[in-house]
Length: 363
Image (cartoon, rainbow, N blue to C red; front, side, top):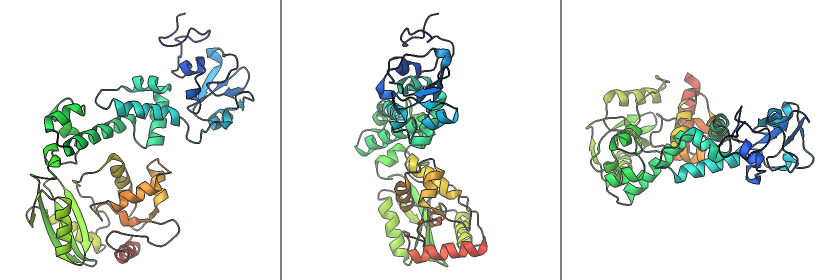
């Protein structure tokens, strides 16, 4: 029976049940060490891909993402290649690294999961799962984020909008507006000009925590700020959108402002408002996780990092909280240090403590 394209003519490697990991196994590719291990049912032993032992028959091989999976399936480690000495604390990390590097350099091209799996030497199913676990995004989401970043970079560098759109790989202007790479409601041309052409209205109202500024476009809330001085809050808003048309009481919907005030007073635990801000894929991922924290409860930064599938990203989570432009709507005040206390807050530690106290009493 003929072998599949790209796979060496090794006895037992047939088209029946072929797994993309057969290629690095058959070639004893050391670059695949750490991406997976394989177990041989006739011996009960699992090995790394580069193991110099005799190649097993295909019908006697099982692939595993981690050495733990292999041991749980009843296999024991090979004493010759010692697969447990390979850093597999994050299974498939090298395969995912190859896949992410490929997506980064081919952001302007369509890439199917099947093709990416061949690049990573991992089955499509396992690549999808490991990529999501390690990166926190699916391969499709990762490529979209890279493409959006390229577009934003080109626009900031002064490229004309049409050139930037096609060079980033969107194919047509309509695809850009569907993907909203510069923030929902903000066109690429507006982003290029620092918000020029945008119309932002704002209101400032008194609350139990001092002055509250709520700013919005026609698409949603783009800023919520807390402070003691209306002048300071408005100056901060203009600094964020230096080229936008900003006017007091022009567009913010009164129901959005009322909802935020009721929330501050503890009368409306749920605050579900549309958001129109610029953000990276990672920031959106963190902010969505914050919105899932129940009213009256808190989470540590490490808890949020684990919730989004990136347990080692606690510091990045803290940065995403610090750069949140719509406090309360995205409740970054509900994230606290694991060591205790309320921790820092852009609008003041005292306000954070009072917010948490109000929520705790009324949950």
